[in-house]
Amino acid sequence: VGSPSMVGLVKNVSPNLMVSSSVYNDADSLSRIKEWVGMGTDEMTLHYSYNRNFGKLEQVLRTFPGTDFRLIANNVCLHECPYRTNHACSLAHASQSKHSSGGFFLDYYYLSCGHEKMQNPVKLITADWIRPEDVHYYEELCDKIGVLNLTLKLTERTRPTAWILNVAEAYSKKRYDGNLFDILNYIGNQELQQVRKTSFVKAALLGKSDPKAMREYQKA
Image (cartoon, rainbow, N blue to C red; front, side, top):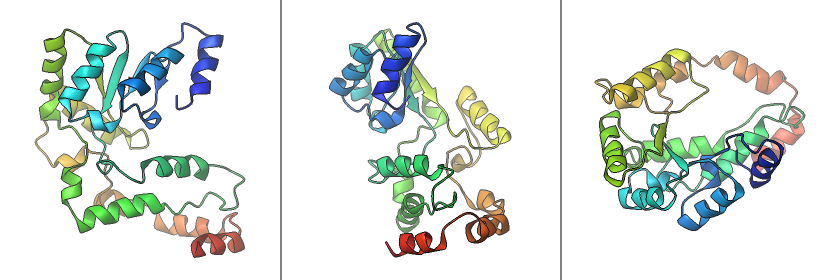
């Protein structure tokens, strides 16, 4: 869940139902994690700042041994991304069926993120992904401190089943011999070529969108 009120609602209605907190709750400090645990959260997807900071990760695992934690392993968001929160909010609002855009969403944040990576490929390397070959470091950390409350989460649910299976296999085997970007949540040329551009453009031009509202949006 991504809402404190939802945690309270779920626990009031079904106290034994497990509640998992979204990465977008920005659990990036002990004090913030403590607040969510106090609300009744059973599992937390940690902020990306924990992915490669083993000292910080060990601290939270030791402090909350009764809470389960997850790290997203194959995401390629910019390190300390300035767009992340607004991007998530925009994606949520873009799904509104009665919005004047008619379902057409010009993803400024995705385009800006991609532009930065193309201009400076180093930002792809510094993104907070975890290689399958590095999974053992996290297992060793858990063995070292005697806790087994850490798992890796793999994205993305919108991808084809074959792609998801390939990702799951790579991380379960803890190795991948192909191009790493094949299993990271990064849309490359192959995926872009599969987009049905004709229907996409037709939906934008002939759909339910309000042309006047769209022009004002583009001016802004």
